Length: 213
Image 1: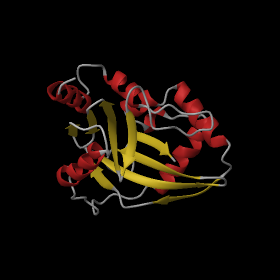
Image 2: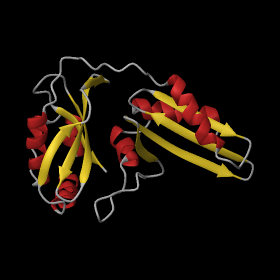
Image 3: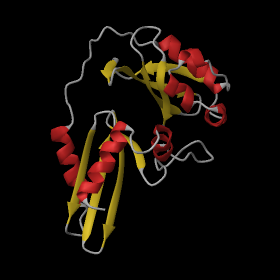
Image 4: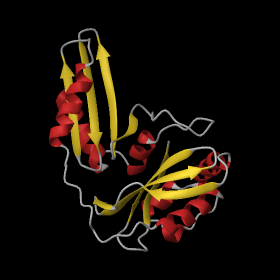
């Protein structure tokens, strides 16, 4: 695949075009292992949290070249690195250095939004019990939490023991028209991270409600 072809598909991934939105989401959804963890790998691409941003990427290699294709979907930024050497991992180093230059650095920390700790705990307890209130979620949120996803959440969290506490790891901030909040979930046996995106306001519907290690 040429750089021009990669650029076309990266733009399509960011805008959710060429393929149905649900196909992009299925491709990027990490496969969950039996013990509740995952390898960040979906269908041909990896989706990982780098700093406080989600990046979808995939590397390539063969005799004489190395490549890296990384897409920050929320920021609408893609970086493609092609090298004429098959050693040393320079493609990863270049991607990191370019990202430091092109990714937005300004973060709004005083946007008049509250942490919504009580809402998070209430929603989490419901989902952990296999219950789902569609009125609390946007169309995308309702689509994600199908019966299989709810069962995965319930079965994965059930073995961690009671939820001891929920703490906000940083102030809310605006991202892509939604309010991004990140929490640390302290269970009896393990601590996890919850990343949420919601409509603005104290009763804004959840767009994303994702638990990661």
